[in-house]
Image (cartoon, rainbow, N blue to C red; front, side, top):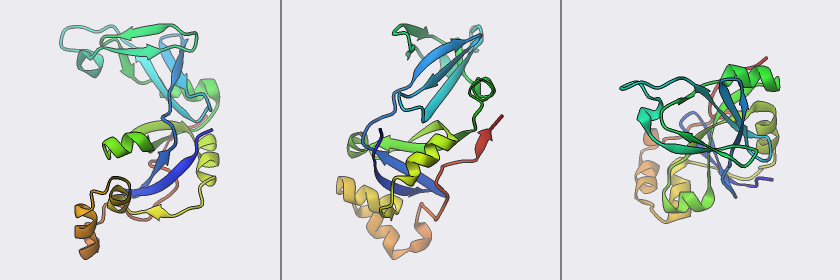
Length: 176
């Protein structure tokens, strides 16, 4: 199970610092690929649409989509970010936008990643952390030693990136 190493204020919400990166594998549902991580918390989905010149998903970027059966779907512009409503109908759950990253990745580059998550499972994970909630630049300073922005923001509180927010990084995308 994921361990939350820290929680960081991120805009009006929170970002989770995790002990491992969510790795999502997908299953085919009609013209959609629906994916979950091994704990059933983080999820994603793609919808198929035939690409044409100048109209390609992700600007035609090529990448691999790892399927739950061990095969790899080669994406070349045909798989679009979508299928969330199919996901919600199939799983019968609420999907939310969240922000997280794995601690070792943050040490190399202090940038968080946007994910989708199954709301009920995400809330259970978030409840496991009872430690300090860090200001954005404060945690960067603690983790990487790069403290110039934190020192600047401490002198002028209205420059602070984070503000108190809820346990998630966005509104519910929808539910059944």
